[in-house]
Image (cartoon, rainbow, N blue to C red; front, side, top):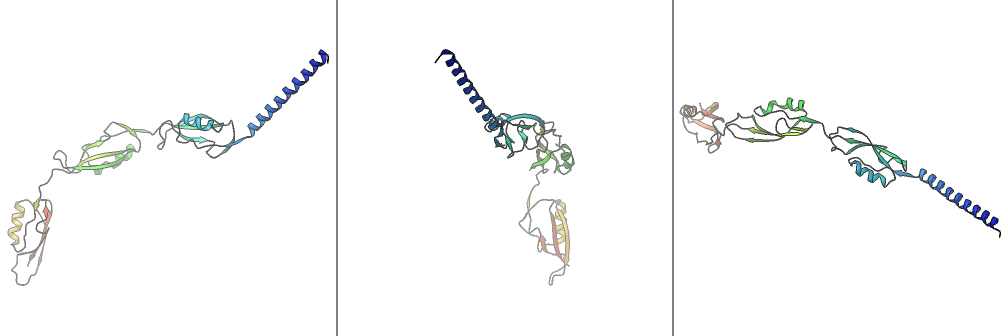
Length: 238
């Protein structure tokens, strides 16, 4: 075989090989372009986590916006396009919106105010009542707020709960209710008033064989623990 023929043979062979590889490459690209994948759910993931998850599916991710959100933490994905479980071709792009976190509000001062009167201001501030605790103290009237958490002027997420410690007023002294039955009502009532106890309804009833003005029933019952503000009622013979 002459050198000229060998050269021609080599050129033809090389051309055939190049054509073969080009055809294979084109076929591979066509196959890739037609391959479909299911988009995974990347909500509540960070952007880096989403990139890693979507890369496994031969997909790309780009941030398309940021929005306030009450449910998702800051920098977490709150929305994706296309939606999860959608079918797309590989090498496609998934657009995501990230959370800017919850809207912040300033906590008002409630100390010294009545717990029953603060609801409108809580609603206006975008807050809610949290845990309510009570304590006896002479420093605040009953029903007044002694402390709050979070404290006033603190910045918190909208919808946060504010806990309150509420006064029950000064602790009242407790007494044992004496047995009044059989005693004269006028004497007992005069003595109870002198001791600043709270006299309630006095009911008069006929009681056979008993002179009038004698206590025949009472409430609270003898031996009960009472405070001066508790009502004492009696039934008296007529």
